[in-house]
Image (cartoon, rainbow, N blue to C red):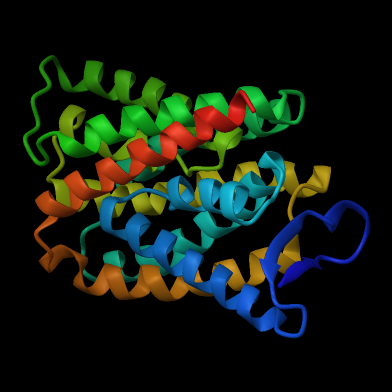
Amino acid sequence: MGRARFGGSGPFLFWTITVERHDPLTAILVFVLMGAAAGGIGALFGIGGGLVLVPGLTLLGGLPFHAAVGVSLVAVVAMSVASTAVHLRAGRVELDTGVRLQFFAALGALGAAYAAGLIPSQVLFACFGVLLIYVAIIMAGNGDHPSSEGSHSARIRLASASSLGAGVVAGLLGVGGGIINTPILNKLLRLPLEKAIATSSYMIGVTGSAAALAFLARGDIDVVIAGPVVLGVLGGASVVAFIGHRIETRVLRVSFSLLLLIVAAQMIRQAFA
């Protein structure tokens, strides 16, 4: 066993992973499977999959945080395309709502992506860990029971502000913003959970694209790693988008929440390493 490096030289020399030197395909397979897991979880819960990819790429793959976020954003876009195609055919995407909110999300993502290059990795590791704890609490809670009050226009304004915040989170941490979009669409705008997930999947494609452009311009996207990850994401998201609405999600929510808490502890530990 040895340390095998992929990505050549220059700004793309990011990734190291322990593999047999004569079998680099093993490492590529690991990244395909990591992408498939991220794509499946993303499609199932209407998030971008970055909650799986960023910890996986940093803690297991050895990428610097900014490089992991760049790859994750590319995967977010791929996941969105794969799952949204299925959701649109099934009529589950609320296009009017998605288009109205995604402008604010894209604006926040673009600004945050440029700012991310100025923030130390340790700070971003800590922020990601806190974010995972927040998402774990949301995921473990009750699902489809909208509870918002107030006029429709007031809820739209609040949702727009929340979408801007979702974009900022996406641009800084590479998670797509669906972790904020889905609860907002479901609980604030009163969309059924199935439609909230589908609409969020549509929105994060635009959010991820805006942020990914900033990371690409800065040289923080390793195309060698992004290739196998995106391949896995497309497969995982497509399969789950077809069958996910038939799955009882309560057990999955709780299990995923426990996993997030474990990963959160590791990310926060990394911040102080």
